Image 1 (spheres, rainbow, N blue to C red):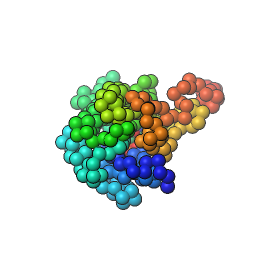
Image 2 (tube, rainbow, N blue to C red):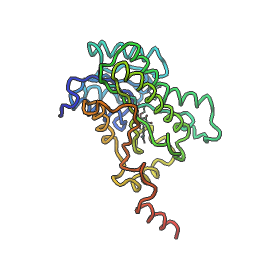
Image 3 (spheres, protein in one colour):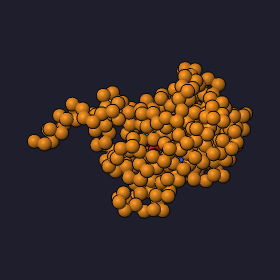
Image 4 (tube, helix red, strand yellow):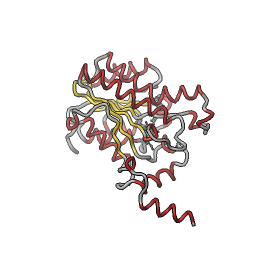
Length: 272
Ligand SMILES: NC(=O)c1ccc[n+]([C@@H]2O[C@H](COP(=O)([O-])OP(=O)(O)OC[C@H]3O[C@@H](n4cnc5c(N)ncnc54)[C@H](O)[C@@H]3O)[C@@H](O)[C@H]2O)c1
């Protein structure tokens, strides 16, 4: 048990089950002394196991479908009641694409599905920030983190319209990072995580091969959910007070690679 987040309070979106990255962030935040409120969509609350996590972390669970502004507003109000005032950090760990789920090719996107992808996976971040900003809910030097993926910058086969959602998410972090930084010194960043085995991750076509490839390309190997959680904790802590409007790569070095010896060897083997 550390004390990096001693006295800090925060909302954690997106813990569905014990594979979720948000689950690990919640556990680590609690271990570091934070008080947390957990939230997920009503459907996820029924399907997942968030209550186990809530018990472990002594946290209240507040339902919130992030496509609904009124749900987000109620969540922020409830969190302020639970905390007895403003809070210090928010984790946005949310992603869903009906086009990916239904295996629709990127060249033939269903546009009403695309609207849903963007709404749930990106615009929800703006809505959460908007509610917090309007209610002046986050303390000075507070920290907001959203999870993203490298396909926002470099095309990854199979990631489909989630790549477009992540590009928008990262842009919102910069644009709102300016507004919130100037007014309240609140910092806003995205963490771009290695492929990770989770429920959402498993929806991406060929995740197993992608994990294997990324592992072999990355000098430090893939970052797992716990590595991601630890990075988020550092961003919620006072040790990173001047880091804002950044897309931060937690990927074992993958994004700086074009070819590794291990992948080259495997490529040659397959060639014979
Ligand atoms: N798993 C990976 O390979 C990977 C890599 C990089 C980034 N990420 C990102 O990490 C984040 C967390 O995903 P994960 O991999 O832990 O999977 P996960 O399935 O555990 O989490 C996704 C969460 O989004 C929530 N969600 C979906 N629709 C919602 C709605 N309408 N309202 C509220 N919540 C909703 C789900 O209930 C779920 O808890 C996502 O943003 C994802 O894109 C994942």
